[in-house]
Image (cartoon, rainbow, N blue to C red):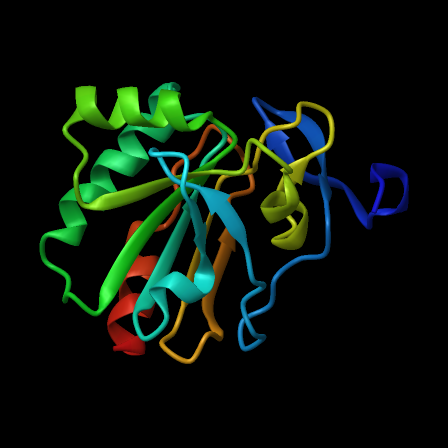
Length: 176
């Protein structure tokens, strides 16, 4: 599928007040979570099914090396300590696996699994969060229950804002 044939949502979000277009259809609560194939820090391929049977929190960030993304992933890493082993938090960005490995090591992030959509950008399209104008992912949080259905979906309206942590964590607890 080429970019020209993808569904586009003009002005779906803003980046520092500037309207941005999202590619792909929005994810709705209750629908099955789209399958994905992403790269881990060690270059291995990880899929949604690799975490079957767990509540999966998909923390989608534009770039791990930016202040808001750094804050967000660190916050979810801290929150993970209080969550059950039945929960896995996956951070997704278009950063390369080596960049993710470097950042996680420097930040001491060890409870969030960082995954890359750098290679084919299909995750961004399938989850409706690929920003057409800049090629990055919009800031979003998706909670996928143990049955593989989307229990929570938030695409943050302004990329420079943090997500609603409380709502996402409440959705996680309700999915256990």
